[in-house]
Image 1 (spheres, rainbow, N blue to C red):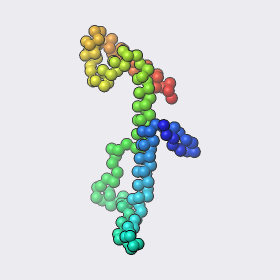
Image 2: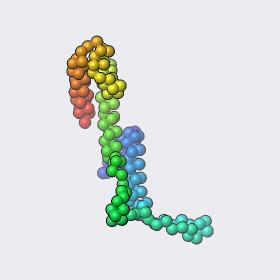
Image 3: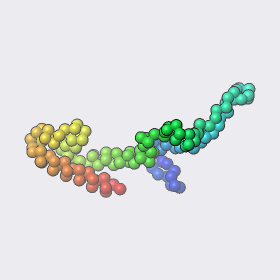
Length: 148
């Protein structure tokens, strides 16, 4: 576990959340500083070898060129963190299911089996599988909500 300093407090987070946060901070630095700053590359003797202009672009030029500077498909760091936290809660909740409950959830959501296929395999009706599935999902929901 690692800690992040956020709003004047240390918050304990998993290694994955920490890595996502650091990656996001690096992206912010890149967009706020690196792209906007002109860089000077010097030779060993101190003479200027090359001047690399800032790569910041104007919104007007981007609109005129019908360009997109940033992808709308990428997820924000906050979104990634929320997903990771939700996945961790789900993982903990799944560990609290019985073997039979976990087997049904695995078959439905991870093995993509239909309720009819599961019913045939377990020797029960499809309606019984459906009821069990909904009961298990309610149980998972309660476990996750109680973790907040």
